[in-house]
Image 1 (tube, one colour):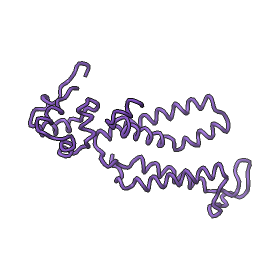
Image 2 (cartoon, rainbow over the protein chains, first blue to last red):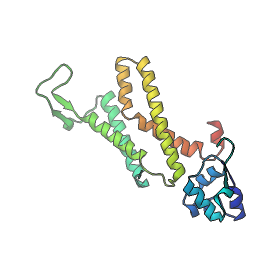
Image 3 (spheres, rainbow over the protein chains, first blue to last red):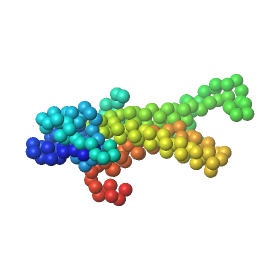
Image 4 (cartoon, rainbow over the protein chains, first blue to last red):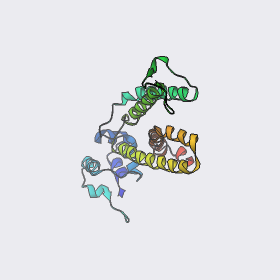
Length: 66
Length: 150
């Protein structure tokens, strides 16, 4: 699954740590999501999308093979 | 599953180290506490003596309780990714444990196999802890450098 978390975070001028604190996870989890090493749960994906004020499909996108 | 608060880590570590030290001293150095010896049978038999030394029972209890506490204590930044790593490390430790038992079954006999079984009483938890902390703090650390070496 591809995601645009890094781009959206840059748009809001947020550090990984700030984003992590706002949605209640560790900075390392944000780092892992941005590097496609961890696929977040539906709840976490919805929290991220809500924070960026965008539909979840605009942040997360299925890839071939998913 | 609810986990123990992070402050339980130190008690867990101390208990397991005490248990392991006592266990090795009791099994290899024939160390025992005289106040832990009790008469539990009327007379000696071929396999069992009338007097039972409970030092190794205490050692195994301390080891298992200590390791269980360590394994079931949350991380300071426990979140869903850490929980997934935790569950995968448990799966991994069961797999590795039974591979070791299967290999031991064919290459170790008698006393050696008995030793393997003795260690096996607590090694699934040790393998879990090693795997969990390896993945959490080395492979997933994002430090990059260590990751490329390992």
